[in-house]
Image (cartoon, rainbow, N blue to C red; front, side):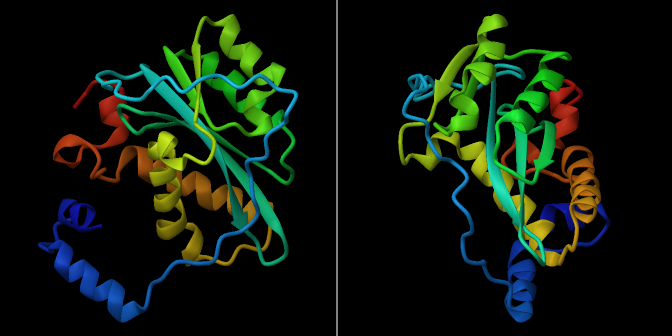
Length: 213
């Protein structure tokens, strides 16, 4: 936030932002529904990224599912991120945890480009034959987190933290339509305006992905 405020012409430091957050009483919310349920009949692939240097765009992509609480019920969000640039390649919402919305999102992304390694958790949506078949057909190596090892997919976990704290927790959505518009606006901001502290010199994800920074 301090980096973003400086791009808007405000000379602020991280300590000042922390002080404001403390005064506002910002805090985390309780966890919600479990979104990663394995299917014992599906093939589990080994984790391929331990010790691998990430040096270029489209080297590694990964995905995950999180939940978003509505005033009544939940909706589920899936996103695909490029590890090097932190650019969100695509995302989609669903009112159920069926694999269809994950497969549709992957199809859209693969129609534009492809990566060398694709990393997921061991959830049934990602171990399904339909999902892994799309990756295998493109010659993409499949990597899966170790059981109970959320940090194996750390860049998506950090994305969810940003989405929740900077967008979701600040609103009380009533409908899927409201969520979709709110997330559309947020991901546009995240990709094209927001300085990312995980990138050297707080660069912008879209510019890094496009090779302009």
